[in-house]
Structures are given as C-alpha cells and as structure tokens.
Length: 237
Ligand code: CTP
Ligand code: CA
Image 1 (cartoon, rainbow, N blue to C red):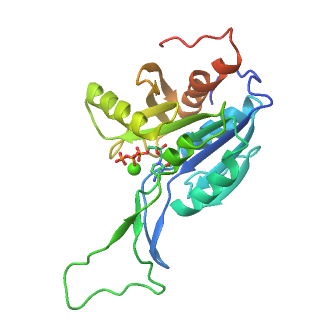
Image 2: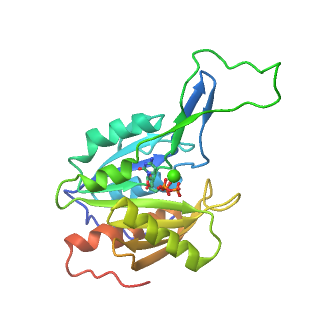
Image 3: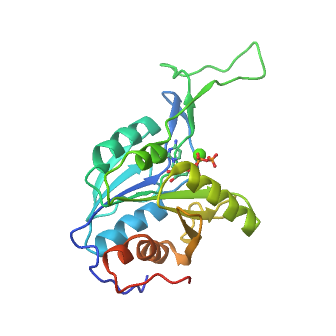
C-alpha cells in the first residue's frame, strides 16, 4: 500500500481525467488498439479525489476496475472520447489527458465479420486520421483552466526523449506534458512508473518515480496545487 500523506488541497476544484486506450473497430469482433492499461490515469483520478476534488474520469477500455468516489464515463473509440471530453471539459479547473488515443481509425467499419481471403495472402487496411483532442482543447478553453498532456515514448536516450517532449508540447499547446518511457516491458500495465514533467516553455519542472499513485500525487503537486497555494513552491526534484 501507498503511504502518501494527503491534504485536502483540491477541495472545491473540478478535475477531469481521461484514462485507458481508445479502440477503433474493424468489424463487430475486432479492433485496432493499444496496450495502455489505464492504471496511471485511474491513479490520478483517485489521488485528485483523495485531495478533495470533484473528479470525472473518462475511461476508455480500462484493464483495471473503475475507481469508487469518482464519476465515471465509459467510452470506446476516439470519437466517443472526444464527445465526452467536450461535454465535460468546460467546467473543469484541471484536465489531464492520460488516455492513449488512437491516431487513426479504419476508414470503413465492416458490419459483419471480415472473412479470411482465399485469393490473397495479404490484407490492406485503410485508416483515416482521428481528431487531436488535446490540441483542440488547448487552443479553445476557458481562462484559468490547466491542461496536462501525456507522452508515452519508446526513445531510450534521455536527451532525445526530452527533445521529443519539447516538440510535442509546442504542437499541442497544453500547459504541461508528462513524459514517460514505454516499451515491450516498460510503462504499460506495470504498477510503477517514471516520468518527467515539462512546462509550455519546454522547461523541466520536475520528475517522479515510484508507484503510479505516488507519481499521480507528485504530478498534481507539480501542475496544479502550487497554482492555488502560493506558499507551496515546486522545486526541481
Ligand atoms: N491525444 C489526443 N488526441 C489524439 C492523440 C493524442 O488528445 N488524437 C493526446 C493524448 O491523450 C496525450 C497527448 O495527446 O495526452 C500526446 O499523445 P501522443 O500520442 O504522444 O501525441 P501525438 O501528437 O499523437 O504524437 P505521436 O506521433 O508520438 O503519436
Ligand atoms: Ca499518438
């Protein structure tokens, strides 16, 4: 269990978290998806709720149970996620886009099971681009709202990982980007995580390593709590 001292410092705040991974159906029995378990997003929702925030979790295909004490909206595809986020974001003080969002969806979804082909040993799928939800949110939002993006990268080199993050946050236009390394065995589905957090100017504001719940609390400290508590300063470690 996690021994994290919790203050009710987010009382009165409204927090929206997306978690999991979107799935794009090819036919009634198959989809294109990703390996995000939703654990880090669920941990963020639980941490914010423990600190007194009113939390809405938009959950896409979680591999873990929905948390209690949090309002949950379940979605499947990226377009469903976009609809839910659009409906919920306006009233949020903090939006955290921890979900792994499919960049593309099948251009056509078959209404019956796609059959194995007897005339060819290959199958081509045509995909079309999904909307960039984080970019849209960041460019058209209420004043005073804080928006946090996530970037899961397979880059092994630290400097290159950081550079990718800097480029990504400038394209997205969010306030903070949480960067974590993922791979065949790292990041997804594990109970611990290591992240660095950068701000809109591309500066490193801190890092966190440990259980996904402790990482969640640290992320909340870095991106939000300090904003409302001028006596708390965020250092570099
Ligand atoms: N995101 C989003 N909508 C999309 C794709 C991503 O809102 N269509 C959000 C994710 O939830 C995440 C952030 O954007 O918070 C970064 O996602 P990522 O996949 O790393 O960014 P991309 O711009 O899609 O870059 P990449 O080419 O690395 O996939
Ligand atoms: Ca992507």
